[in-house]
Amino acid sequence: MGSISNLSQVIFKMSSGDLASEINLKPEAWRILTQVNGGRTLAEIAKNVGMDEATAVNLADTLFKAHILEVAPGSVQPASESVDAKFFNNITRELAKAMGPLASVIVEDEIAALGEALENFPRDRLADLVERVSESIKDNTKRLNFQRLMLEAIRKL
Image (cartoon, rainbow, N blue to C red; front, side, top):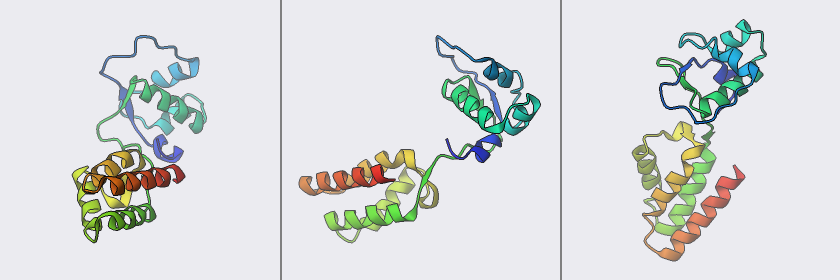
């Protein structure tokens, strides 16, 4: 979900959605849940229950993924891993080979269309971006080749 220090600053609240049908919580998870009030950061909760931050972060991440916790309004959002400029230079270069000089404009437009920014594009949205960008490659062989190259590049991240 991002770096530990970032997640420790997140403020969680109990989820209002439906819970998974079967939930098996460890005693440590219960200790965290009793402290969640939509106002305390995870670091404060860890300190209150005498738990080290890394353990609290791992437990909170699990509770978050199980939809037991959600990020409280006004909290810092947990950062997702982002992709660096080198990756976008690569995507733009390969796209230009496949379809010409408009590649950089298309990449920028598709990033904007996804509601993201080049500076901190989330790694988990790369597949969406590659798919959208490759739609602008008319030639089937070039499109498939581009997608194959991008898949290899994403694997190496």
